[in-house]
Image 1: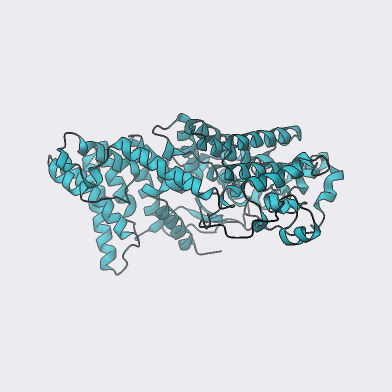
Image 2: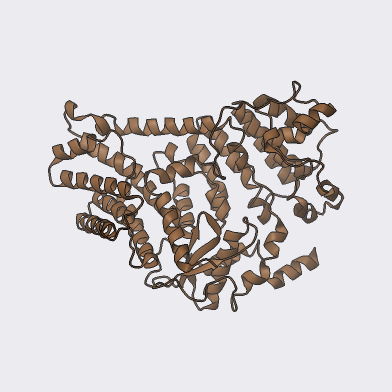
Length: 547
């Protein structure tokens, strides 16, 4: 097991990497897997005839399957679903493949559509439902590449219909894996068709239906960069995710800044200070203090704002004096500069505040909402000669520019033959979940939790070594079972975004000191939901007997 201190450090580092202005942009624009840099596609475009199955073309360019989705004709991962559906006669599909997967063989745009269509529409080609689903979704992706978004929507609808006919919709394992792909791709198409509100509504379905599913949550795109108001469903999404991933607490605070709810943002930022202070011990971090100072100032809580700013400066200076300056020191300084500008305006020195704010041609570190509010406040009653630099544009123009830039980034990656394919998730391996039953449900003699809490705290490190898709939910369920076994009704769980096999947990009851209401998880609710995918040993035995 890694050291307990290093686990706390990883969490804090992850929070640093997703704070403020970049947090929500990353959620909207990123692919599920880290996106590769976009490059000019100079590879061989494939055979002159994309449907050619001449031996020399197949040898050089791969089968139609590879040209469609980069996977062989008998993909792995669907075997357990074939067994689940009783499709015993289909298991030959999952024999050792005659060719290996190779995404570089995928064709682009219309040529990719043609390769997929040959497999899907020719009655002599692919008829197995489990293989057809990823092929249909791959054709939808190629429709994106060809900028035919209505055709992409039609293919998503087709794939969802075929999954329904197979009896897969509503299956807990399917819904957490391949089934996530439908709403992801549908929402992306709606966004490109100029329907951001509808895109948000569709995208949020996965996470809201499975509030304790880590991958359903992180694969969801709320498209907040394209929305100037926060819907009830979007807020619920952020609050659900804040309970299973500390990063989303920061993102929610940033989003609350954007919609002018600064007091609520300040509460969340103070909670972040609280748990990081407990985890860090003597080595406090300055950035959450600076963030809180800004939100408190915008909320009019000037005494609290001044206190947070003072502590941030003192902490930053103390670390510099120890020879341990913070890596994000320039970002912290920029946030404190913004606080100083807000203080100037509050003290009646509005012209000085305008000059200092406008002097920067661009602010990079504070939250978008904080900058927008500051811009609006300082532009009011300003003289024309004062409207330069960061005051040159109105809030409406700033919003429009962000929307334009975010859409440009999305469209630019559509042609890289990779990013959109990350929205086609693989089938879950049911056996990977089931094999965890004994260890996950053994709360009395847990092998997954550290024996002692992190130094000077009540947080424990939990670890599991299993398939990556199973890890977050296994740890969350085990934490809930541990809470009940130790006499508590709930817990706080902090996942490590770059290490799904690890997390940090603290047990308690509502209202206990340190049990932040915005992060608190009810153990019974978590157990009731996640036992569907990781049943108890007794439930698993009964399931197998029935099967």
